[in-house]
Length: 148
Image (cartoon, rainbow, N blue to C red; front, side, top):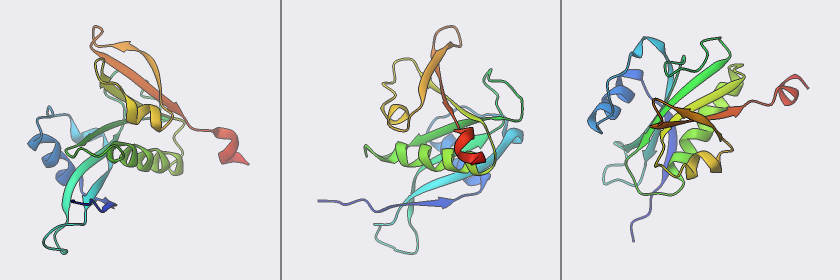
């Protein structure tokens, strides 16, 4: 049986964009991109060349969320069938947003997507957007925890 050994690594925005493009994601304005995190599979034939199997990009909002300096939008994708991979990426991006002082994180997902990774990382559905095609998911950062 093939075992995945997953590890988070920072990646360049160019690497993240190339990964997303290679998996059919639309081109997006990368002038608002702030950071990118990759999910690497270390269990490869060449231990010096781990496989990039997922990315999450944090950016200033583009999809209708307020551009207020307090909101971070996430774009993520995984190309492996692992029930934890997307949750690992979302959790890492949330912790980065928290460390950078953001107050809320938003993600847009197809309305037919079950959103299991988003639910597992405590995001909640806020409302339908894009003519009912996408759900906007939101997670607020606990301000009391940060200020205490």
